Length: 350
Image 1: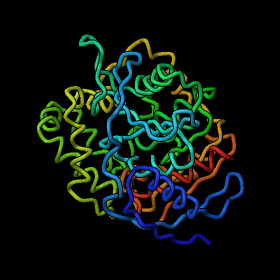
Image 2: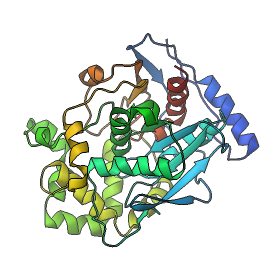
Image 3: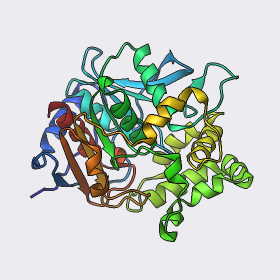
Image 4: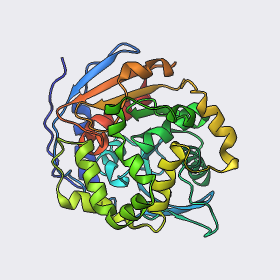
């Protein structure tokens, strides 16, 4: 039976913090499920986390971007790349990173294009938010840092990107942790209507499809993001300071354009770029993911998501699904960092 572990979160970075983080991670040892099974892991839905900052960020030119990223842990450690979603940023992993660093991992957390400090190298580059473009950004990021292979984890947009890399570039993905499972999208499938209750959950897609939505999102991006946080994580008692640290990343000058294009592209209301056509065609086919995988879900996720049984057949390698209970919502890494970090370690060692 899963048990609840209470963790003292009043520690910061540094050698002492990494020692404590290692002890925290060791305590979180859910019962091992058989391959392909499911594990329920109980945790506490907490408010603001222990850590508030990664410290100074790094920067590297990669493909079309100058990527701002956090790096924690030994430079020679096995690499882990953690990918955030929308409307979130690298702070979703601010408590996950030291837990993994304490285990010897080199943890890299990049800002997605158009968010935070990540900028385009050229003003002439199309501000494209389609899934293939965002995924290729991570491959070029790995190339720039000479990382051939990494454990990759993510949620929301970041979960989709991690899935794409695992499916299309398995030689670059040692193992995968994906919140909400298999998130690869097909524009053809997205053109099909959903039942009204399901359509209602995607209300913001329709808002973004209008010029009123573009203007409104640009004007109210802070309030909009906070509303999504509350809807997607209804039991997460985050404070204003926690949200505001992330909301600062929404001030990137390309942020609105990337978000709007992402959702319009999904519905076929905006064109992608021809350079990604072959990749998108492969993704449209719904490729199976063969790398070792742990999928995760919070028991209080208020964002649209499929049941785990719906995507089980999309993973052909070693696989486990973990339901994280205790009121955990959509931003699982920030709400349950110990459980997410444990999944990274477990999938790497499976």
